[in-house]
Image 1 (tube, rainbow, N blue to C red):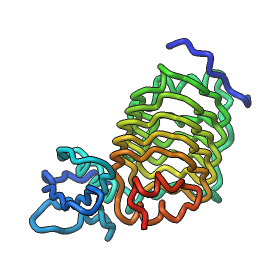
Image 2: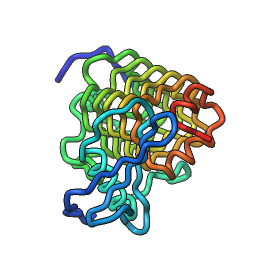
Image 3: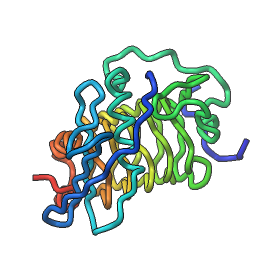
Image 4: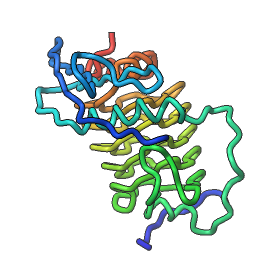
Length: 244
């Protein structure tokens, strides 16, 4: 196992999606609204009636099918796998001695659907300024509440259905990550970087989001409207997102 100074502070069915068709509509400030469909026409990817649409905030760039595939999978899975509610009872804190270091291996089974072979309990762990061992890991269904990731490099991570209520991500780098159905309620995300990040189905109620970077963020239209209600987002970030 990779060595690190990180420590613990306290002891659906799958959908075989046809290749989605991608259409890009250019809006003011070069924002991109992307709608995916498995069939024809400008429409929805339905997973229990959910609309999957994405917004690319930033400069003109070529868009591949990856974003649509991720959003389509989210639409299907989210109909039966919602983000854990903040009021939901959580399991007891794991007593495994090296539970915090398990983040450096990640969840090798669960990805978009959040299935896991063993709970990934990172609650109260401290990964401040961790620059190596978290990059590119799968943290599906991880329990991350009250953990510290300040200044960590979490680029290219896959966080699906993670529970990060009250966690601290100040200055965390989420570049090229997939942040899918994560509960960031009351989390501290000041200065976090969501550059070219898929940000689907996640909640940010009462989160601190001053100076967050949203360059080329891929986010659904409905998710964007909810995100824009967070009054802590700075004026520059709101402009970057396209909040009205």
